[in-house]
Image 1 (cartoon, helix red, strand yellow):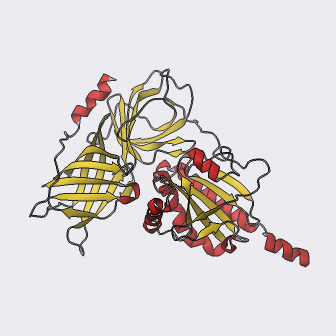
Image 2 (tube, one colour):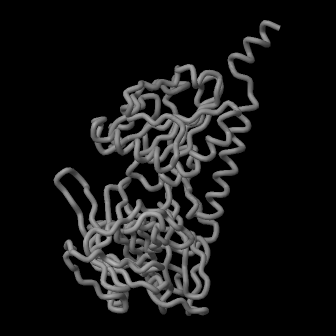
Image 3 (tube, one colour):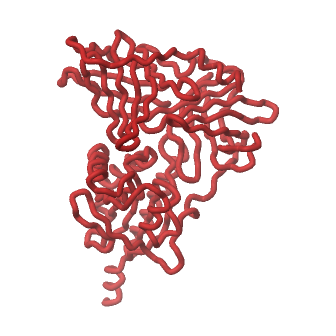
Length: 429
């Protein structure tokens, strides 16, 4: 792996500068920046687009750029000689001293009340490359599906626990990894010689992938660095028909159960149950999520506008939030912040903590909660008809399109069926 690790030398150097107040406010230059976080695996690059808000001096709209994604951060503001870019939903932020076309500082995330994680951060305005400058050609082409084994102990693909789906144009590669519980969102990077480099930053996820291609075995072998300290080896084998287990078979009702027996509070104190009048004779979608979960936010970004368009058809959604704390004083504001950001009109309740064992206990009708998000479809009679584990977000391309199509087809089918009200009416007739 020496060749892979030495590639960090080609990336922008990073030095950590303290951010301090100054009598002269920072002059932030608008435009696209090439940003870099310094991780254990080396430099993790991503894009930033910083634009001033004309009506609010000293404040900026900022987007994180990963492949085709323009992910909005919270409103950024000048503080002395520095720029602060918050991502409150994930309790993280970028803080950097402004020096002309350059930013230098830190990314930090509040993990617990007493634990704060930090990494050095820098950015250079006017650069658009990911790892290296884009080129129209490359020595290898990695487009297609790759059967992947994260955590491989033998250096071979012994277990397919993910599928890499990549598209390459010139030396630029985009795509993601599909897993039984979700995807790795938007990955973007480059082919350099015989090696692949991919990265992602969305305020919560910090992903860095490096791998070397073996043209004879048609494999990729490398490492995956996540967050501040996470690391896994991985191996992938080119396999155009690689697939994962059926997401409809991972989570299911226990024998004897037909629906969910749940009753949880909203942040305003109102208790919500599936027996409430708003759910009667309605097709109901139960969304198991967490405000800390980017894949859940991808699903919410789909469900929230979908609900606005379809609620008049007789559809309801109930969000069950499993947060890092079961204390409403801690988690209630995070749920409200999430609802505001995604303009959620349906109720979201605090169902418990995001520990999967605890979440499974909170929903005793299910065999287990194995993934955030998980989506449960309930018919007009109040019976569970389908459970989909995980979510293939827009970063998965055709897989996302397929999910949306199947989602709509299933809801249409459930809406076409008679509910208890219609059945009773037909009996009376």
